[in-house]
Amino acid sequence: MTIYQNLIAGGWVGTEASRNISLSDPSDVVGMYAQGSADDAKQAIAAAKAASPPGPPPASWSVTRS
Image (cartoon, rainbow, N blue to C red; front, side, top):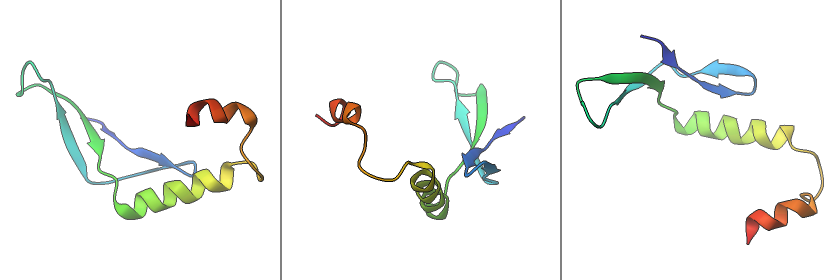
């Protein structure tokens, strides 16, 4: 079964995986998904910040912050 990894800074990461099971049939494994570590989260946040344009967020973002 394919292990679906996390995309961080343009690369696929994650070697340990957990099973995603069907709620109606717990014996049915729907997929295997990478478990992100604290390090993975830090790398993802750093990559997102590096990809964001400098300066304050656009005015349109204020709608999502209310």
